[in-house]
Image (cartoon, rainbow over all chains, first blue to last red; front, side, top):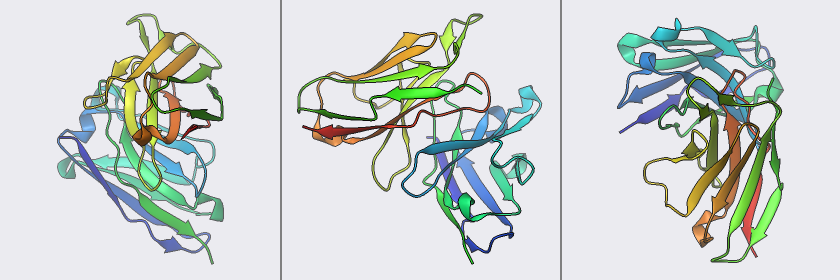
Length: 118
Length: 113
């Protein structure tokens, strides 16, 4: 069974940093295209980042809203996906989800809440 | 970037009746080499993460009731709930995964009439 569990969300001041983790089980993270998606309170879904699988060279992509501030990565030995978030802004306040690209089936975590406020 | 536009924004349907949600992409998301449309549908209930219903535009995720079906190709897609149940009240989103950024539609709120 595919399972994803995010962690690392917290209250942080504007300009601060945070590192989110997404522990996977039931599949190998490095064999799949993996994403981070966020949802601000009362708003729709916003895709923010993608990392290709090993066959795709681990190429990374970002939404314009986070480019240059966020970095997606993975640790094969821990089967875990990460999102390093720097220079956080109040508009980054959201629930952050990790998700598999739905090639032949999906998988989302329960999310972790990031609040950026002074 | 590919823009995904859903219609309507909200929809009220009687129990047992058919519900139809549309999704249009600003460019084709059909990859001709494998004849697959890179389109997914999600259901989201309050306080829950999105749940994948449909991928490749028409393939139902394991465990999803067969009253949910997806259709369409190229730029125009439809999610159909053949006989609305009370538990289907939710927000529904389409998403393209043809090319990054993997954009979502704005969402459609489905309610009981």
